[in-house]
Length: 213
Image (tube, rainbow, N blue to C red; front, side):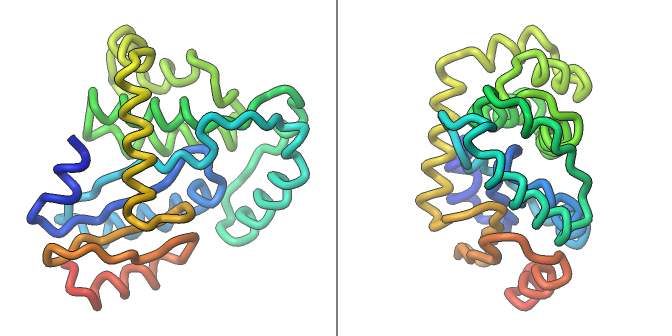
């Protein structure tokens, strides 16, 4: 399980904590690509944080708040946003299914988990697919080379929801209070490298100074 592989592994590891529907995580994508590329031999783990898991607020209620945040992210990162979904008033801003889909994709095809995460981000922020649309996540699974029937069955299973909330709790227990965050396991110790958006160069330098290779 994830708890064992991250916490009890003897290997130095980069641990990314995020949520596919977190706007700052979406903006952080190109920076995370650079960080991964800088440490190609270092194991990379992902933990879903559950930004608004079980959220009950609609786009109508959050429109002003979200638009302001998205504009800030776009300005800082240069990533393109499609703001049209903010006008779909009755859509719930609930991030649980997106997180669960990434976790299931990772269980079925570990090497595809990171790309699935990025595809889920783009699906929402650029293509404006609805956050609780089952077909969206099944189609992303097909594109990732994952059997759609198996994915659907696993996504719907009670265990997948338990796995998701276990990850949310794990993120919290690691002291993470915001996303995106990076925790590095170096020499058997955990270091909170960033709790929020930062440019890759700064993070890479911090990791190198901590002895990550």
